[in-house]
Image 1 (tube, protein in one colour):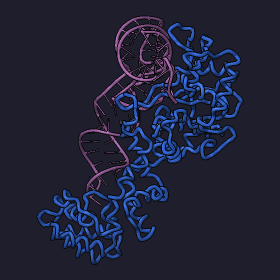
Image 2 (spheres, chains in turn purple, blue):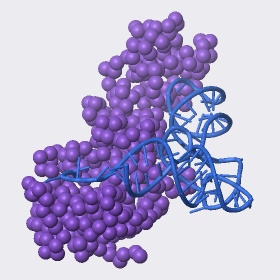
Image 3 (cartoon, helix red, strand yellow):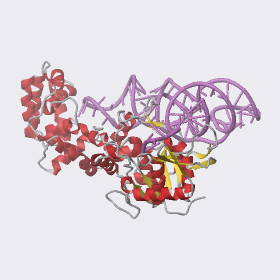
Length: 442
RNA sequence: GGCGCGUUCGUCUAGUGGUUAGGACACAGCCCUCUCAAGGCUGGCGCACGGGUUCGACUCCCGUACGCGCUACCA
């Protein structure tokens, strides 16, 4: 049953200008399967449609896969002994295979195009996910003679795809369920070419939450949007794995090594799954919350740089990131959460000013707090907290009546990291200065 | 139309003849609390429908409905 050939999987996208989440998940499962079985993951670019293929479109695929951490063992930029890995460069191979079919009498011409004469038999697709499915190609309602080459000489997907998979010795074709119905025809082609078909695994499609088909324009459809918004690649990867597959023990946050260990094609659901941006978002928050600070900083720095934020030294940056890390679910939001640590030019949110500063007694409370802060020793969150609460008691106000104006005073915002930690990192001088400066806004 | 696949809370899922149908996201409420998160607790919400088979069906079989895919000189 199990073939003895080495495990070789592939992802064969056409460069359309975007890497779709569906495609990314297909790539992911192929990659996982190859990694699990110490096999080879091949990337092949199906650029048969010359007009729309551009270097940029290819780059989008490479970038997306790189970002997700799906490194390929053979393919563009990587080489390998089964190249070239662009269909547009494999013409001679296709000609050769076509002539072989010609010689064995499998072809005929139709309006200038070349078609494959199907043997018209019953074909059983023994799918690793869907099980055995019988397709009756003798059924008069079917037209099993697929076109191999157009009248203009260009190649049809079904043919080049099969030829490439034979040539590249692909052992497992893991692809979307939309290809299931064409698989019996592909199998006939393999047989006509005297090749053993690979094992097939057709996975359910990814839909929108309302069950409609996910297209390019739908929220979250393009992988490129995730790095932009500040997703951690490991979070999206984890989420994508859970669309159609699960470890079956109620766990959801799983690292890649464990997923690779537990993954089985036979365990993949047959039902198509809806992509839930909310849950994906939640998962990213979980990853950001639990990841170590070094990794967090690695992901965070580009967002800070892009926002023009600079920092004096690494130590300060780490402190800031540490207090803000549990609060943010997308790195995209990071700059507005931390900019006030690194500049005096931060802006004040009007609604927050109105609510917490422009109220009776706010100025007096800020003044009292500033004075109290002057003598806190040592200057750290716990002592700051103690003194602030003492001050509130002395003034006869609730803690919040000091905290809220103070937060707006030092950050310009009404939401943020812990106030005492914020004070500590800002330092005594800047904290007091900001408290006093904010009195003008009261 | 033909062929194929599917159908457990709104969504992702666990469940393979006997369960109070479990978990997660989202939602509501409460607790914690300096805001926002996180965390804790509670709640509402589900086996598409109809027939069988069986002592007993979410689970097996058939049908219906609905959804999706293929049926291209798209991939």
